[in-house]
Amino acid sequence: MDLNVEIKNLGKVAHAKVSIRPLTVITGCNSSGKSFITRGLYSILHTLNQDVVSAYILNVLSLTNSALLRLSDSIPRRSADDDALLADIGLLLEGVRQSVADRLSPSPLYQPPASQLVLNDLKTAVAELARRLKVGKGTKMQAVKQHYTDIEDYLSDLEFCLSGDVGFYTEAVSRALHSAFSGNFQVADIKRLLSSDSANFSLGDGTEVSIGDKGLGFKLSAAMPGSLQSLKNVVYLESPVYYKMRNALKDARLFRLNMLRRGAVNPVPQYFYDLDEMLEAELPPVNEVFGQIADKVEALINGRLAVTPSGEIVYSERGRQSVPLNMASSGISNIGMIALLLRRNVLDEGSFLFIDEPEMNLHTSWQHAMLDVLLDLSRAGVNVVVATHSLDMLHRLEAKVEADASLLGSVGVCRLSSDGISLEDGSVLGGLRAAKEALGAPYLEVIEERLP
Image 1 (cartoon, rainbow, N blue to C red):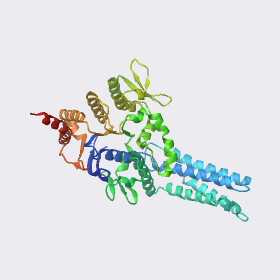
Image 2: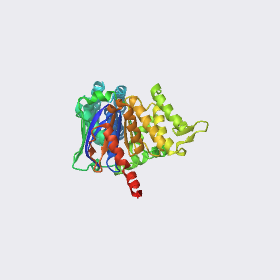
Image 3: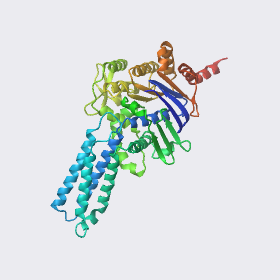
Image 4: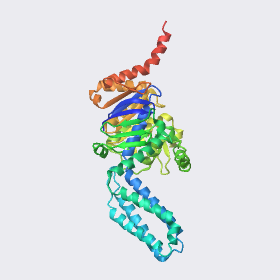
């Protein structure tokens, strides 16, 4: 999935153009904006890959059901007829929920569920409930008026959701994107991500995300839905420390539930939980091509990572007893996670893999091996985007591209200045060589200082 991304005024990024290819390398000095690019692009693609409309509808249905329960508990002198009608409304709510659940599919695109007729019956039943509650002096309605108003508001929301209006899809995605940017960048107010009055994230085909004083705006191009059909899982990998502390960090979600409404931010980025859900899912077995890539990684680390029935990630070294991941080296955790994602079929053809500093905790020889694995993944159909400072990995990639001219069209290089501006180098090899020169400059300075 090739994309020509342009980013303006997002955090440290002043103006960057990034050519997303099967393997994309983003490099630059510290604090040049690399992570703003990877987290921002991840937030957008992961959100577009989700069925945000159905998720929103199911949430509204849940709120409607809760309001119905509160109304039911608040009706004074509730009669058997009231109970029967309330039960009917509950069944109709379940009918709408089931019709939405039935249309859930791998496609993230908005397809209105065939539940309008059920919703009409539901609205009729709720109107009949209001008529009954108003009988006589209307004291029953007075006692539950706020709960009834809530139900009416939710039903109005549902009617718009199920109408097929494309405007609702845009609204639902905008809300989901706002949540994704907030969770992945760990900021309560996404306007803190701005380095100017507004930030813009363009995917090059007319799809745009903008952040400004009025919040987050989203525009979907006509071409993007077709591209999304081929998009599989979208994964973000960062520090292996998160996975060494997996169970403890899962418990940190309680912090989010209890403190979020007070303006607190979860100290754990959302992309960790996104990937954790994928690791827990029961997916089809890995195919032969990706199995061979996993074999290569497992031969390197002399074992494999696995998820136990209790949900713990362990490292099983050949000939030895399994140990918890927090007892394995960080290098094994780092590169071993790639094999685990392959074994669990999280990474597949059409997936996106974002890795921030893949060289972390890796010896030079393992950095070269990591680069080879990432190239293998890109050849097999995984879209790989890495942000790196590794001179060794860039040396390796340059040698690979020089040896195989076909890589010139499948490798993208984005080199950022200290001001967060992408630098034009004219070609893939030109970009790699310029990046190597910048990363190698401190070594040359040391050598020059030692010269007589």
